[in-house]
Length: 255
Image (cartoon, rainbow, N blue to C red):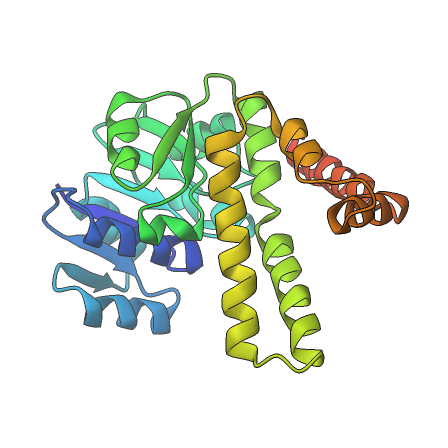
């Protein structure tokens, strides 16, 4: 089968890298040149990639279509494209709902919303999909871990938490810069911080059967450094601010 990508931003780039490194069988990946730099980089990396100047041409030549443009661009272009009922259409667009997609696409194709994140290029991380679809599930299970969501309202919760990716990286940056200001070489500081949080995440996956509250409690000792960290961040409103931000993102999506 041929895979087509409308839009070539960071997410599309990551998904395509993951596909090309996986055992997924496909003939060609046809991509738009919306981001010419990324498109050319992908074409240089992989022989099976073709760049198209025309979005309709991508749709005409492909079996699976991935919509990976911004909401603003999606609202403008999707309604003018001609899809087939035989298409499987996977949308990465955060604020365009299934009902809106169906209205714009016009034909009764298989339409699925998915939430891939950049680690998909490493074939890691969860990929929520809505509604459940066996073929799409099998596809993304080769790129990470598919999470099937029956209710689109519930999928908004997952979209909301995906908005914490950049804030997480910002947290790593702040801690790295803090070490650098105190004389640690940047390479060593960044390696330490990223390795620390990778190890903590892996530990949480393995040892969170009793709940994350258990890990929070177990990682603190009376008058210890972690107890101080939790208390001071709580007092500063860090965790409440995090929840407030998630609520704000959720409100934006739940329209």
